[in-house]
Length: 248
Image 1 (cartoon, rainbow, N blue to C red):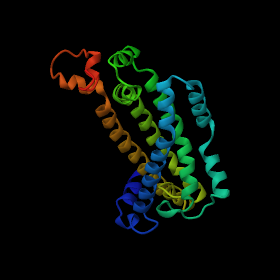
Image 2: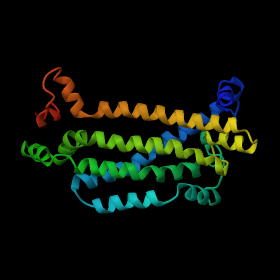
Image 3: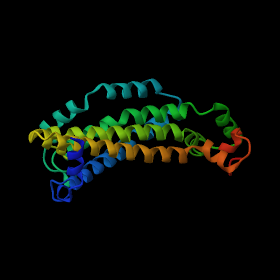
Image 4: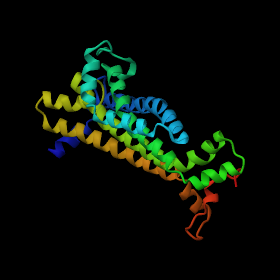
């Protein structure tokens, strides 16, 4: 079975054409990136502001929890049957808009939760020390809180990215775009090897995206950068080393 699935994947003919693997993979990647970007634009500013002001934390977390409880397939089904419809939406394919909206809603909870928690968990001593230096609230947020919260925020982005990539597969159940079309094609043709091939593509894509985001998280960690700057010296990092040069 696995051998047949690999043979299907390595057959160049299966990658070409409007119904080929390449087209579906591009659609899924476009869906994932667009949905994640839209969710970040919608969710991160409010979550970061609430975290900085130490207000509305209860509301932010509970809105996220409600979002987690709503089945994304139910949202997709309702949207595809409603005014949004199942028409072709540019490069995203059939039911592309309905799929995008569903994925954006699905991506919001981890982004909002991690952004809010990341900001609120920043060491208050460092924040107060920055204010004591005469820094404005905007400077405290952009130069102190945001860099220190970035690893937690990036973890939320990673979770949202991988979840959206994997969940985009269900768009095929309403004849939508993405790699799920390969899986539904396999079921329709009673071809287990094609189903396995589609599942392998989704899994490999998720692993690649996960790996890339792990690298991005490491780069965004100021503690790691501070330790690297110290070379082979002690591993203990002073709080002032986490601040930009202009602040120290």
